[in-house]
Length: 396
Image (cartoon, rainbow, N blue to C red; front, side, top):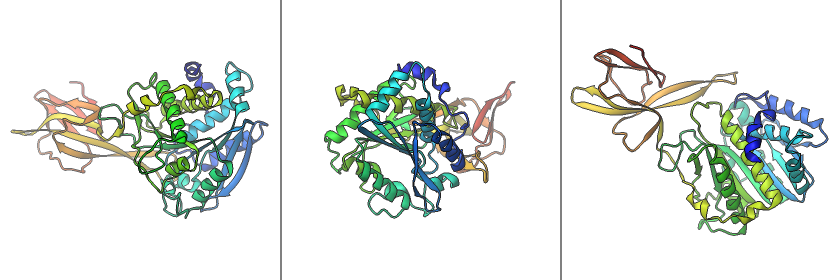
């Protein structure tokens, strides 16, 4: 069924959102549209530091409470896009997934906070307007957004929680060249990383979600390191009795706006909700959870291998591209830099060039941190032109 849902994804995709930096006002307008639908109970449950409303979407009438929240870090919007798609899915009245939809809503009550940090979203910043990382505020509760999240958890006492984030796009799934496109974690609730029934249920769900996603991103599912962070909401919510699943949206080649990863979030979250509704996850052995590779950082955007930079010196170059937001815009520009010069044999590139027999233009030198704008030659002439870290093979 979920493979079919994957194929029909465009039917539910919120077409007004095409970029990660879609902004607070567009979200508000979408919520106002959904408010007209009898299925949705949408309330303002508090305000951010800069007095933007924070919204809670309530769907369903079942006894199992599920709390999902996104953008506690303002510049992590992939799951927010997917949550708007999921709202469209539930708003659909009759199609081949009606039975699935009805069963979830009869068994569960969903509580969705699509943008917990609207100030950070508007500034495209990880932090709240106070400059505080909200995900390190579960104990001190210095932010109004953090106090709101804890109040929700304490009041609702949800059986399951989904903490929805984006991680750096160059994390790898284990010590491999595979980007960790999606990563999971059943957060630890104590320093010993013990497994109690609450955390066990989260692990069982993750086993199912990993199996589902392997069909679309084989060997590209990772696991966020389980180190206990006593200030973090995920770790504490697990400790407070809610089975907490962390989902991190990472990188996928040629998907800078994370629209494909958005689709993967859509089917993964719906699969999780369906499994909670049916209790299917309870059949899972958690041993496969340990087999999910832990995230590592062994990938660069581009590696140029075997480049001659002097008559007796051949090196590898590791190059990364980073985003810089364009002010007053929903777009970004990419900047590049040379991160390493030397032996990169234990690292991987999302893109790689074998530069055996190639050399730099006469007079060009390399230094760490310089923009990656290079021309690579051999005796026949220019072979590769690299502009801002993007390589083009030249026709000779």
